[in-house]
Image 1: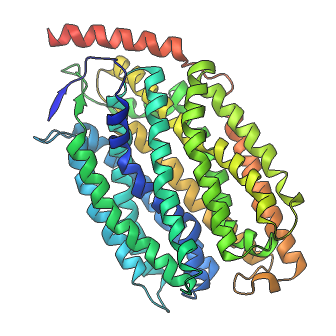
Image 2 (image 1 turned 45 degrees about the vertical axis):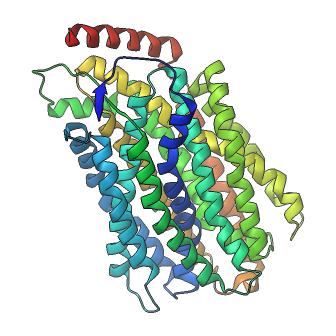
Image 3 (image 1 turned 90 degrees about the horizontal axis):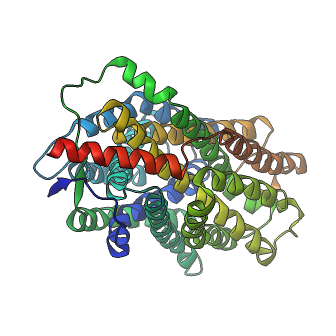
Length: 453
């Protein structure tokens, strides 16, 4: 099932699309967990805002040592069915079990219960994310091809996010209460995960990089990965560009309902528009990256995203039509954040393998996934605690005081703009461009051919 990696040929589109299937449940989960699940526990199960925020934050910080350990194990794995294929098959059952236990929780559930099953769920997510990203880095070999593949993965992921969002949109007019709509979303992800994973492991070949023998991985090599000029900037950018949208996601339901005064159906429609924009944004921004470089495209996305957010307070209250173009354009540019930083990480993995003689993709992607998880946990913890401090109560909805709703609006906008613009600043001076990446590939392929001979 494995073969040596020795080619930089363009990846067939059909293979890229089938390989991207893992993005379907992961993107659907991202919407359900970041947008709906925290609000579900706070507003419907009756768990206090601070308790929900603390549970998500604790789980994320528990993940800190787990994430790099998974990356190291993944890089060292050898099995008859391949490296990343094996880990992909291990991640899906953990994801499904964690989701099932969270879905079946009832009123009075405690923080320890939330932490336990969030941890199981996120362990499955980590395994799937790491194996999928590292596998992608071994499939696509060139600077431009990696931008295209990660663009396809993001575009396919949009399908998963939109499909899960359609569930409450369809169920609301049928008379189903909001909690049942969220539960249906979770069941959908549980059923989708094994189908998507099965397609990926069946259709995708696995390429293994040739490694230099006799080189042991020492402690200083770990430090070299973190302090690498390019990787350090990617990690800082990834943290900031995950904090910004994650901050918005944590407050989106409250902001759209109580500040924009939109119905639940309109809220989900606008969120679907935001996500659908990624179908156009991810491949288009990936194409732009092949023209002006990935890091410059990230900077363009950050500035455009921030300027668009500044227009939200001027949208008429209750007007979904007026908000739709802004949500589409912000979603278009947001699609470039993770697509481009993940593609850039693949280029760094080549540079590291050239320097150290070993495959480090799993560990490098563990670092980027770790920053995203820290950002997601921190955004929920920070935003929910800030809202509780200013007197906002999610159970009151629009009955909150004008001051509390004004604080909600400021919190929703200011945090994301600050973090996203910080992400743009980290890209200034980035050096691993297309020319340098191509030179690294030439040296790697020459050495791989020599070692194979």
